[in-house]
Length: 208
Image (tube, rainbow, N blue to C red; front, top):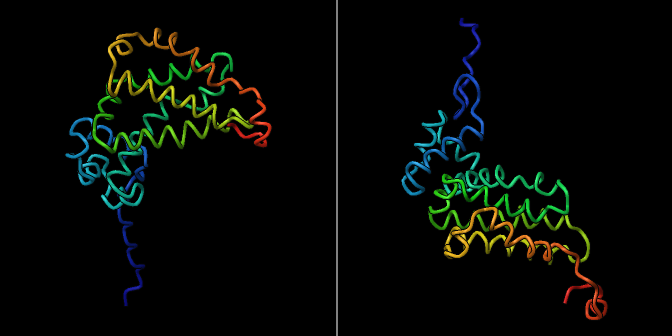
């Protein structure tokens, strides 16, 4: 009679040694998206580069679109560093917001990722709406926080579009420092609390 314990089944997608992390998969995917583009990058190729089973990528990210979204969001989070931007001197917040955007978009690799179709545009919209806008609303607080945050994100979105995605020569030819100098007054105005008016008082404090 064989009393030896049965050999445990190997967990699918987790090779021997150190278990793979989301970060290692995102890193491998980022390199392949830059090298091959979105359409020519397969989950199997990413899995091979990261040393994992393709099923592990599906488990963590759901699809190639989900994986690409994580790559883009990782890039945005690293450059924009919302906590760091919001945590400094309130008087220089407009400068930090402009610098964060230009630092991100002046990076050649990030610019290349943004040219990879509707997937990139969708991720950028979601990041601006669900990360930056939501965090700004929370940070600003008060009755008009949503209006102020929306104005800020509108200015930053306009900067992204007219300097990087569909550049206007007048703006694209400016240095990041000149861009900051140009747009800081508009951001300062957008961030300022709105004065109460008779209309907002009659509406119960709502912005009219």
